[in-house]
Amino acid sequence: MGKENTFLSIDLGGTKLLVGEVNSKGEVLNYKRYETGYINQTAAVAIIKKSVEDYIKNEGWAADSRPLSMGVGLIGRVDNASGIWLQMDPKRNRAIPLAQELSETFDMPCYIDNDVKSAARAEKTWGHGSTSKDFIYINIGTGIASGFVINGSLVRGSHFNAGETGHTNVGIDIGIKCGCGRDNCVELIASGMGFDRSARVLKRQFESRLYIPLDENLKVDVKEIYALNQENDPLCTVLVENAAKGIAGLIMNLVRVSDPDTVILGGGIVSSGFMLPKIQGYLNPTTMRFVTNGVVLTKLNPDFIGLIGAAAVAMNK
Ligand SMILES: [Zn+2]
Image (cartoon, rainbow, N blue to C red; front, side):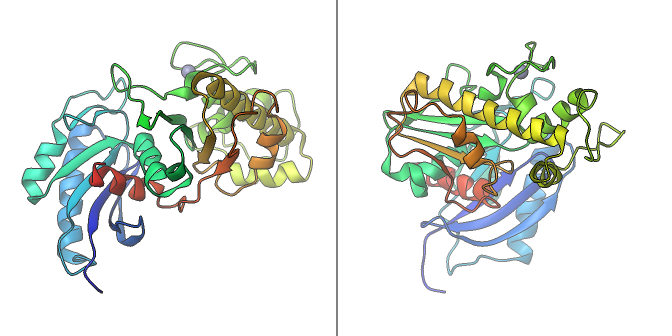
């Protein structure tokens, strides 16, 4: 192990935390996974501190020297410039000066950002966005959100809430109500959560061999939907086509807003590549004519995009 600059990366997800080290090429050198369950911000801060302490004690630094700085990717609204974690969601909202707290605890510069904005920063530093000044990164996982880079800058908005594109209508009406107050948001059609919600609504109209758990806390398996789609299962065919059409609709709406030359897709729903040709089949060539680099899958490792994103945050470029 030679001398190399590393960054301590922390990726807080819905039910898990990853702590790891990433080098300046965006390569993950080591990491450890911690289960968190559903927690609020106060609990999250304690778990982050405890887990980082455990990582340092039991894993040790991967390179010869300490990381230059630390970066944290978080759920919800984050004031990156002030280092304040404003909220996880409307029910879990307590402003915490997290960057300062972690910096003092671990005696290291610390920067924080929203998880999807972190991933967009990773794309800008190491991914398909590294050669573009105008791109959109769309994360399609449990939910849907986007990071817009316009004229070389990441868009944050007046309350750090820019990019919540999952809550937009894409012209598909299956009569499903969203918690945001509107109907048929694309997140309820094309995300992991959306496949589950749509399956429950549409199972009355279409036959299926898909296992839909009676307990709504348990979710349908999207991989099973993809497999059954290939066997022409009626419900799974509709679910996949609606999702592809929905994501294509979202992409075309966003392309009209910011005129990107590249659209990058990431997240568990698209990372296998199964959905991409189906999405591309619904894109209109006229609408897409200035997206010269096309709609592409992230080339960053989808299992570690959160960790790599947190390293991009730690670099604070
Ligand atoms: Zn909504």
